[in-house]
Image (cartoon, rainbow, N blue to C red; front, side, top):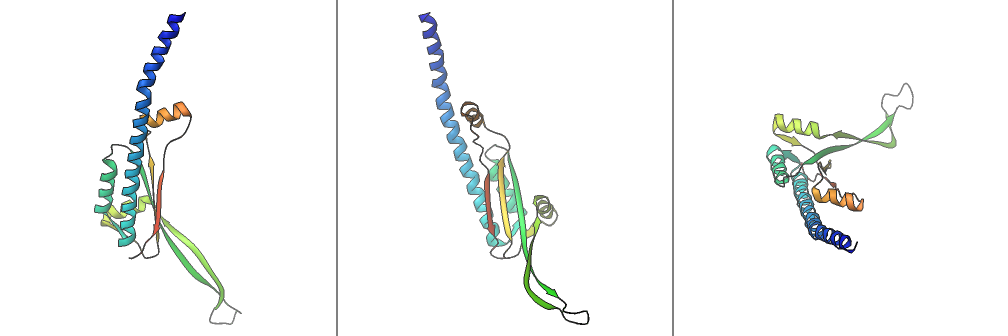
Length: 171
């Protein structure tokens, strides 16, 4: 019986000697790749905010940098135009000119990724105006082996979504 305990301890010990360093390096690799994707996304978004447009060269360069990691990412780009319109009303049926009510109606117009990509493919550039909002969300499509191990062992979700947003400074 004592032999079985020793054999079981040796098997468990050898598995842990392999599993723990692998898990540690896998977590560090995921952290480094997430940091790289965050940095590239921030640089891409800051460039858009400064220029006021996205051109095909910028977008392809961003995709190449992200794709150089060998991981699959899903990228969502959202362009929001904020619009403000004053509300007017007529005081009577005979009045020719409307009177400002003091209220301002605010609404937004969204342009999503498919519209932006189609503009890039047809015109090579997608222009925005000063004050528009641009946001980028990057999601991992596939979990790495280390992420799956963490989820299996600790029942903890390690998937990190990257979100950056900003206002266009110039057009």
